[in-house]
Amino acid sequence: MKVIYRCNSVHHPNGHLWSTEFWDNFYKKKWNSKENSFDWFLSYESLKQPLSHILKETCESGCVPIRVLDIGSGTSDFAVQLYKSSTPPVHQITCVDFSDVATQQMSSLHRLLEPDDVTSTGVTYITGDVKNLPFKDGTFDMILDKGTTDAVVRAPQGEEAFDGIFRECSRLLKDGRMWLQVSDTPPEDRLDLIRRSKLKISHKDYSFQISYKDLGVHFGVEYFI
Image (cartoon, rainbow, N blue to C red; front, side, top):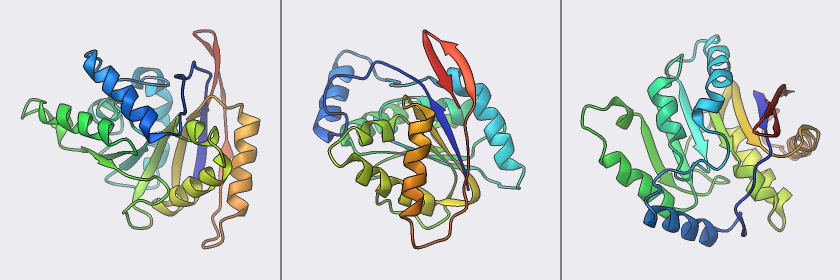
């Protein structure tokens, strides 16, 4: 399994980012102000090029169709954009968030898509705990984590919660597939955290390739992949 880290710095919303109540209220306010889609970290356009490269790498080992799990998807339209225009094409994306408000809003928006809009057929939204998801081992070719674990590690006992997410993502990924993290944590800190979590997994002998790349400064922030 290959773990790729995408790191950046952003202004975090004020509040307990690990709290369901915080995000429920946050999304309700956004919805009431007619802001139906919210990207906390980078947009799809910002990540389109590196994602295309990563997907091509994933497909070299012959995975068809490509299944993606987006953890902590919120009300971002990232998954729809990825499904609609990625090269190579993604065939199915499952978006999961612990905020039922977010998943209900996105499901509602999906129902409002034009019937012939193909983007509505391959993206689904569910409410769930990313430490315990109702999928079989080795279900996904890629897991996308765009800021979710950053919120988690800021919580009390954050590293313990991160361990649970790490364990579940490791279980859900097919062998040789990728976990893409978008983070504002310095790469050396996140890599150390991942290595500590790996040592705590006992139910399978996972093999990891861990790497990152500096993408330069955008909007005054240094980015890494």
